[in-house]
Length: 610
Ligand code: ACO
Ligand code: LMR
Image (cartoon, rainbow, N blue to C red):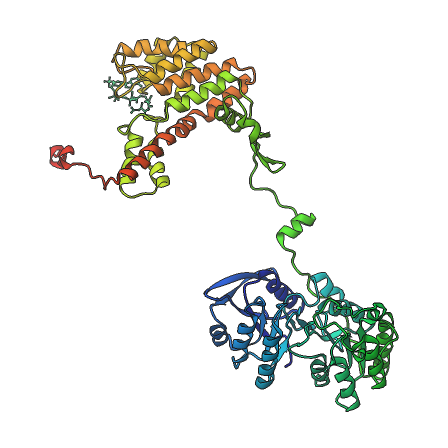
């Protein structure tokens, strides 16, 4: 199996990070096509977005290996990220797919019995298995088997893995393979192919299997193999050398010589790294390899100079022709990473001054919510902080809470409640029905508060008498916001207004309320329902509360009135009642409402025809 710039893989299990690592390697190698052709995510059929350089690409997701192989027959490799519980089944299925001839089993902990069965099956199918428990491998400048061989992009570049060299490397350990990538890049023209077979006792392919593959690759001029104590793989290499099956220069090292200083059998990191017998010790293996004619340094530290020497000899003999060193394309950084590093900057899209997180706790205008909750009037305090960015005095927070309680509902007949109820009975969900009610708030219903503020403030501050103000509004044909009610009147006063007036006069001066009441005296002369309604009453008292609070300067008050805070207060309050009506209707399982036709006057156009 040769890995080229056109080799493509299927990826078993959606693991975005290693998958992106493969694609980033593709980009560094300047591949024309991504190396991942499809993803198998059992039971899912969709797609995954990933980067190919700076460009986003779509990778199809298939529910089964069979479907993926059928749809992507050019994909010859399966990178199997199944867990140790399902790696066997997935690998077995893949081995029977004619288009898949290499399988990388990443999982650690695959039972030995399953590994041995898969090895036998792979041999029978003449397919290449890498792993279990491997990071995979790399065909430099061409294809990355898995997402972790070679390490992070910086290491891929440092080890010059983005272009092919002349060295074939095989190791049991993935970490040591990555370390050797750097050593080899320092003293030779770099890696052509590097493979980590994993540290299990029964690897899908052995160190010798890959050395024999390297023997078949004309671009590999020098082979490097890193073994470990335990097992017989390295001895088999010595035998193969003696038998003439290995002809290319081979530099080897068996790690684990420190095991000899332990007075007991030391089990090293890998499952297979335990010398059961003397001949399986690192020292014995290194000696056996030397006796077979393989180049083995006296220590791991001497591996690098030996490699350098061997490489120089091959260059001098013309067996390795140094190539011009080209730099890889710069891999685009992920946005979050670049932002974190400070290598890019972006103007923020939003500004907030009212909300933050203080030591893991939400804060309103910098006040942690635990402190807000501990206030005497927590709801009024929360509004004070989030709307006004101020810690309002008790009379103000009390006023706000009274407004909310008193305007929370006014029965099902009012237009907002009616529409919310009709929507609920039409089967709309709570939020949609609530929106239906809230969207009814208007200059005539529940939405006159801000205009009442503006008109009362302007009239009073410009010295208009109430009668001048009323007359002016009449001349303009504008109904005075905050005046008038459909059912409340002088004889049927609005209790809400009564209660708010009583509170206000007891807690702060009320010049604006007095002004509004003078206006009411005049409008009542016209009709008894032209009372100061709850919108107007709240508006006038709000102006008094602001004027009484030293925390608010004239300019800020002007800004508050210009923006208009009070219609929002009504919406917050009335949402409580609207949700109540919606829930009531749903509990009652009320059917669709249809207005009775007899209650509709069908005005014929003919009436207007002269
Ligand atoms: N200012 C001056 N004159 C008024 C006002 C007003 N706010 N409201 C009604 N009038 C006059 C009308 O001009 C009309 O006079 P006309 O007969 O000379 O034409 C007469 O009173 C009757 O007008 P209608 O609109 O039929 O009276 P209605 O009782 O139906 O009006 C309403 C009630 C819609 C609330 C009205 O008073 C109004 O629009 N007010 C201003 C908006 C407002 O404050 N809404 C809040 C209501 S309370 C709440 O929603 C919680
Ligand atoms: C309300 O608070 O909704 C009412 O005062 C308005 C109305 O139409 O009764």
